[in-house]
Image 1 (cartoon, rainbow, N blue to C red):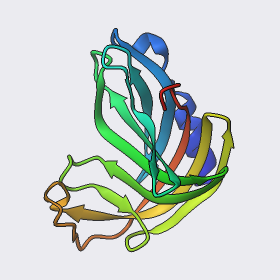
Image 2 (spheres, helix red, strand yellow; image 1 turned 120 degrees about the horizontal axis):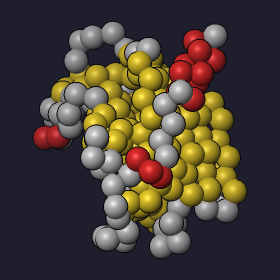
Image 3 (cartoon, helix red, strand yellow; image 1 turned 45 degrees about the horizontal axis):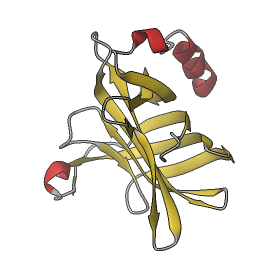
Length: 172
């Protein structure tokens, strides 16, 4: 029921291409519910820098895919909070590496990775260069993250759901 109510709330917050500042094109979206609060975070392609906020990288013969969505500022530029999902794509089989929610800056994110938090992907599909993922988790708050210290904050885990969909730009 929580998920159905949350998704209904997300539908009331559409991110459209008109919301974006010049030089940005929407290539996807991360719709998230963090501790009961709903967010819509477009995944963009910066046409001036020719850089997508969804990218792939080949690492030791495996394809790593990373997508970053950010809630828009009033000016239509990527702002905060920021959501990031990184996963392996092995011939269409997707395996989550990490998910982060930067809702308190870069130093105190919520994190889901093998050693921290609980949960993972509940659905995932690939169609060519297009990805769709659903994630349900209880995420762990860290501090010192921007300095690489990753200290666990002694607070309860935070419930997070994310619906992620995007199409990789041609330069990938």
